[in-house]
Length: 250
Ligand code: PEP
Image (cartoon, rainbow, N blue to C red; front, side):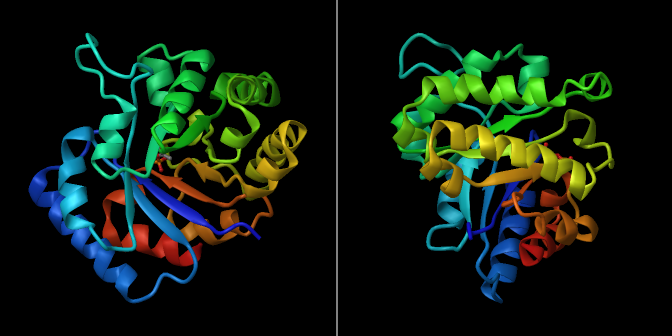
C-alpha cells in the first residue's frame, strides 16, 4: 500500500505573522502523532525562507507553487528549480489549473516544469483536471489523459517514478463542490492505468492526490478510495485544525 500524502496549497495567501501561527499550529498538532501520513505545505516563494527556518527538523515538508523551466539567466521574475532546492523545498506544484488558466500554461510547458524540478532533485506535484464544460461534454478522460500524456512522454521511466500526480477537477477547486468519491476514483484509476502503461513500477509507487474542496468532513470517504493516495488542499490548508483533521483522516 502506498503511504498517504497530504499537501497544503496556500496559493497567494499569507503574511509572516500569520504563517508563523499557522506553521506552529500544524507542527504542534503533528507532534501529537499523525500516524503514517506525510504532510507538506506549498507556500508563496517569499515565504520559503520562513519555512526553512520554522520547519527545520519538523515532520512537515515544504515546497513552492511554480517553477521556471530555465536553469538561470535573463528571465526576470522567474524562480529556478535549483533555487527552490537551495531553500530546502522537497515539492513544487506544476500545472495547477490557476496557472493553466491565468498564465496560459500548456501541457508541454507543464511537462518541462516537471522535468526541471526533477533535475534539481525536487518532487513535482503534477496537477491535471477538467473544467465543468469539459466534464459535461464527457471529455474528462480525454482532457486528463492528454495532460498526463505530455508528462509521461517527456520524462524517462526512472523520473516518472519520482513524480506525484494531483487530480483536481477545476469545477471543484475553491467552490465547495467536491467530486463524489466514485467520480474521483474513476479518474484516479484511469491515471493509474496510464502510468502502468508507461511503467509498472511507477504505477505502484506514484501517489495520486485528489484536490478540490477536500475538507475534514469529506476527507475520510475520498481517502478510502483504492487509488486516492492523499490530498492537495487549498482553503482548508489555511486553518491548522482543518489541515490537521485531513492529515488525521489520511
Ligand atoms: C487547490 O487549489 O489546489 C485546491 C484544491 O483548492 P480547494 O481545496 O480550496 O478547493
